[in-house]
Every structure is written in C-alpha cells, then in structure tokens.
Image (cartoon, rainbow, N blue to C red; front, side):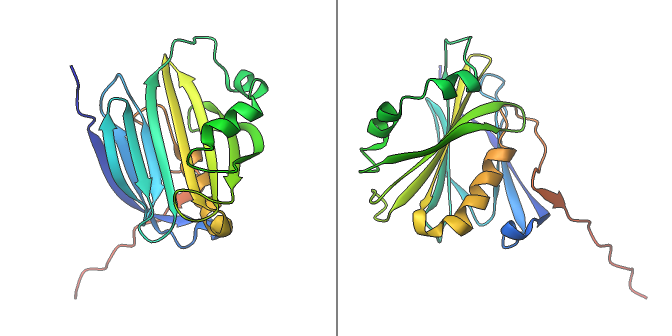
Length: 200
C-alpha cells in the first residue's frame, strides 16, 4: 500500500554568511512518515517543484536560474555501508558512464566525504560541456545509508554560475538530515525579531 509523503513547509528569516547574502529566508520540507524521515532545508527563492512516493523523492529548483536538487530515498540491504568505504571504492569510469546520458562528456572531479546534519555522506562532483539543460553543467552528488534507507541528494547547476550556485548547494547539503526533526540552520543564524513599540 502506498502512502503519500506529507511534507511540512516553514519559512524563516535568516542572516546568512556573505556568500549567501542574497537569500534572506529558507523553506523547510519534512516527511512525517517514520519509514522515510528527512528534513530538506533550502534557501529562497528555490521552491519544491515535485514529489513522488515510490521511491520517495523531492525536487527543488530555482525559478530564475539553472539550479536544481533532487533528493531520493530507497531501501538498501547493505548494513556495512560507510561513506569512507564508498569513497575508497568509487569507480571513476562507472560513475562517468552513469552520468553520460544526461551529461555527455562527463568528467569526474573531486571525491570526498561531507557532513549532513546527522550523517556522513559520500560526495563527488563532476561536470560536462553539454547537458539536457542546454548549458555546461556541474553536478554535486551525495549519498548515505541510515537504518536500511539509502539517501541521495544531487544538485545540478550551470558551470558558469558556480560562484553563485555552489554556496547554495553547500548550504543545502550541510542542512540536509535523515531525520524529520532537524533544526535550521548550519551556515546561517536566525535573525532576531524586532518588536514594534506600541502606538502612543
């Protein structure tokens, strides 16, 4: 039996680091189902563009720029998976082949591990001179396994816009969580609410 994924959205005013100064608030999407928990936090003006339930996935994108992130949750049987082990076993040719359909000429770049709010993930990035978005494209791929669930978070952006897009991608990755009760935000501070004095 399929269950709809119910997400809650909240918007908060934030003070960001200089690199994120143009984004003054964020949206928070959460699953309320205990079998597929997640918290996905993303800066405005990015919006949740689509969701599906089999597998669980959420796509967020920027309405005015080539920037998109896809989050997916699937069942995983590998109980021994670790980010460090996955990093050591990355097959460059296999990764390049997997991305070549949507990113012809894909070249794998940096490979490392990264921190979500509550888990360590494998991270690699790559780029291609052409893509189905019609521009040279860069992808930042992250993945982790928690309690039999495999999480992937892939963010794509126009390579020419890396200086503007990559800080947003890094913020989304750092604030992603594999639980539904994660707080906002890493890389930002909640701005104090100014009280309006009562009228005289």
